[in-house]
Image (cartoon, rainbow, N blue to C red; front, side, top):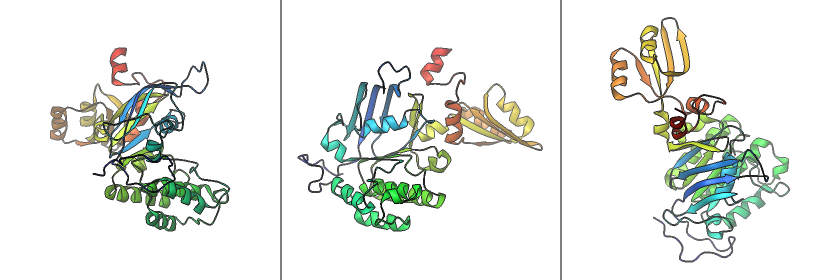
Length: 330
């Protein structure tokens, strides 16, 4: 475990310091309004905890509040009300205008957070000075693998190469809290998968807290240890990824047997090919129910996070919302 520096730098571009252990973060009853009197706040009494040292998936439809949450954690803005705390477990602090926490937090957004009119190597030099844990060798290797020419200005690059540059900055920073906000959307599939592999490999060797916001859920859900789902500014759930997957179940087998075991349950999807059917159900499946389904000859499987995400955030879906809200609605 790396000890916290005895003193904090007054200048984040000063001498490199040993990096601390992975950060945690807490958001409590946070409201963010971009305009006075706004009837639809970007975040609406959001509460969640980001566990230290895990990869957390941040999911939500366009405009759900993901980017606002990332900006709060990185101290790019303050909440209208509520509290945001970031830092070492047990020593969380308000990150806004806090040099120590912001020095150890790296947010990379889809734009790449780069200097558009300067050469890419100038942006990399800036982050190398700013981040105490910056790994120049890792940056060079990834830049070569993703074919990013640092002699070019980001304004001269394709969207994909700008995204790749941002991904390299996020990984090479090795910040105790690293946030990727849709940074890889501009990359082609081979580059995205190279980024995912690099993230997993470096995370295993150099643990940190990673917040990964993405619309490409089927590609990245294998990386998630925790999942946060936001819908219209509200946190629908913040749970371990396996617990999220346990909210649904798939049944495959003879159509009549499948339908018998699916009776009375909320069906997310249904497929049929000849006499074989598959249904995807929402809701937990008790051990005795699972055993009965298997004994009846059915294959019982997990449900992809994306299917559950679509179901939970479906506009106008009866019962959408948190468990507490659904219970109250009953």
